[in-house]
Length: 255
Image 1 (cartoon, rainbow, N blue to C red):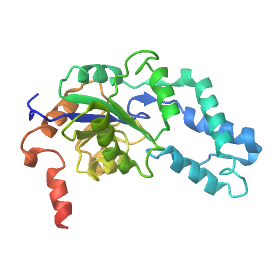
Image 2 (cartoon, rainbow, N blue to C red):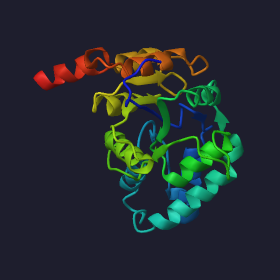
Image 3 (tube, rainbow, N blue to C red):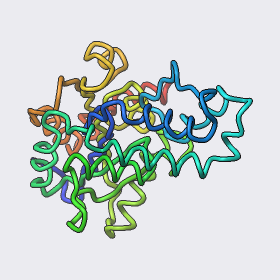
Image 4 (tube, rainbow, N blue to C red):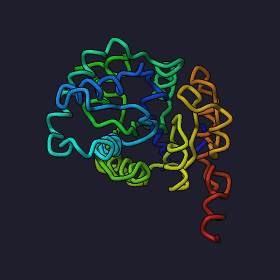
């Protein structure tokens, strides 16, 4: 992989629908937590959590239930929610190619792995451990993680991940982010910072929908790491004009 001497690609993976098939655990856990606190008046019908930050989902639930003191009992709700998620951990599965792609990228000297997810930290850790992406007591394969409660918008997590990487690893150059996700919101977050995104059609969004959203590359799953490796190599190119997102960023600047 050709790259400028100081260039590092920080490959930021979403979790749900990208690395992990959660098996509906989030919706069931929210319903279990809400009914434990408020009874049958609490519902999660028609809630669309795809690509959203956990705090945003919580606010949507609160707005749907103005008659319930959901915000006032937020701490209890989150405790019940996390306990319910732990009870359902065996429903979670690694998506095709997720673990092998992480293992392949870990061998690349100019690649750092990261997590960029809408999940709060405890839930993200639970999902990664339940599906064998990480193991308690062993070295974390992810150089940096950013979570849904770290910033108000998903796009804000991209520069936060870059800053955390530099601080934690003593990097002198800003790492070049590459996002891997399964929703148009992942595409939007990447493009907000001129970063490329590989979209994976393993979530609820089809490959055609992800192409229409503007993803730089779209794949059915992660079993073949070649498209991602090619996107990373182009991102690390010493010629800025050849990097994914460069033309897009110039057009947006002129508009």
